[in-house]
Image 1 (cartoon, rainbow, N blue to C red):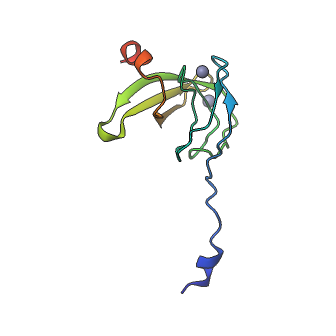
Image 2 (image 1 turned 180 degrees about the vertical axis):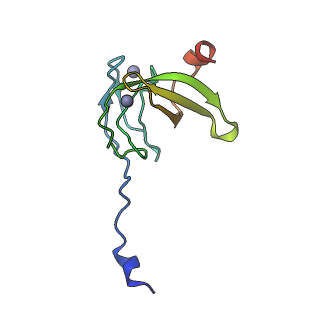
Length: 110
Ligand SMILES: [Zn+2]
Ligand SMILES: [Zn+2]
């Protein structure tokens, strides 16, 4: 057995589950209970540009608000929100969470 295996460090990409208040609609957003990492507001779908390379790394220096630019429904995975940063224009695809209020948006955005 490779002894390094025993020292295997925890993944650097640990998603933090903390409540946050949405900077767009001021809603208090609670973390998801089961596993998935919530990175956007379920009410207005806005996100924040904090991740640089992976979900939860929080290495981006930008910090801009990210608006839901469009929605995609991709088969079994359900809704995917394409966020666009209002400051730098970067686009990031995010899987929608179960309690996201997608219904309010799909007619406007698609
Ligand atoms: Zn919001
Ligand atoms: Zn940005």
